[in-house]
Each structure stands twice: as structure tokens, then as C-alpha cells.
View 1 (tube, rainbow, N blue to C red):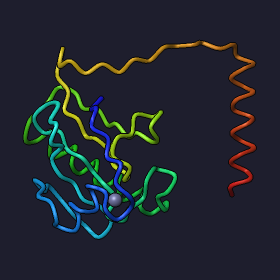
View 2 (cartoon, helix red, strand yellow; view 1 turned 135 degrees about the vertical axis):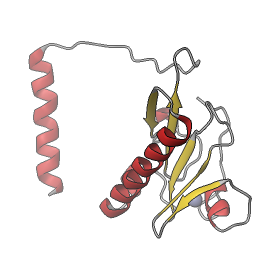
View 3 (tube, rainbow, N blue to C red; view 1 turned 120 degrees about the vertical axis):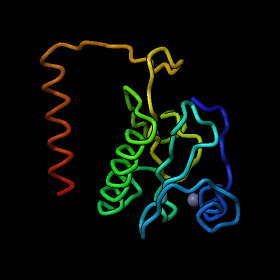
Length: 149
Ligand SMILES: [Zn+2]
């Protein structure tokens, strides 16, 4: 994961400044809710960031419509990356909160072209809980979702 962390306040964050045209970006696409531009880190050629136009910190701060718009843009960008760079794989990465590896606190999603042995490592330590434990987690989430609707 990138080590750069943007600690600027809302409205002055690097993505807000980029969206306002105050700092340069290699723009790929924009519409009324989203913006897609090249990640300056470029893990692999064609690595793009899709950001919400409005300053929202995490996925939970987006409206449902903005969430849908960012995924629509990510898919459009993914099609373009496939056409332009033809990577054999593609990873979407969206991080929320410091503990979730978010480094710029303005909602964004990485569209990362992938190649064999490209050095990207996503560690995923499986815990394999018992089936009853999974049922308990599912029940807890069903109750939470019922309260949200
Ligand atoms: Zn921002």
C-alpha cells in the first residue's frame, strides 16, 4: 500500500484541490458525480483512481446514488484499461479509514491492471470460523439491515 497520507482538512484535501483544478492531474474521465485520473504512484501502467466529485471521506459518506456512480465510472474505466493496456487481470481496491489502509481521506477507488508477479500483495489471513459463528454474523447483519431500511 502507498505510504503517503494526506492529512488536509475537508475542502483542502488533495483530491478536492485536483477537482477544483488547483493541482494538475492526468484526467481520464469526468461526469457530474465522479472523476477518474491517473494514480501518480502507477503500480502498473493504466492504474486509475475514481473519486467522488463531492468531498466524502469514506464509502459510508457517499449517497447511494454517488456510490452507484463511482462503480459505474470504475467499470467504464476498467473497460478502457482492458482495451488500452490489455492486462490479464484487474483489481478494484477501495479503502476506508486508516485501519482500512485509506491514505487520502476523500472517497476513491483504485482500478489496477494486474500482471503475474507484479509485486502487489494483498494478505488475507483466513480464519475459517465454524458454521454457527457465520450464521450468527449473518443474523447480526440482517438485523442491522432491517434497522437501516
Ligand atoms: Zn476532498
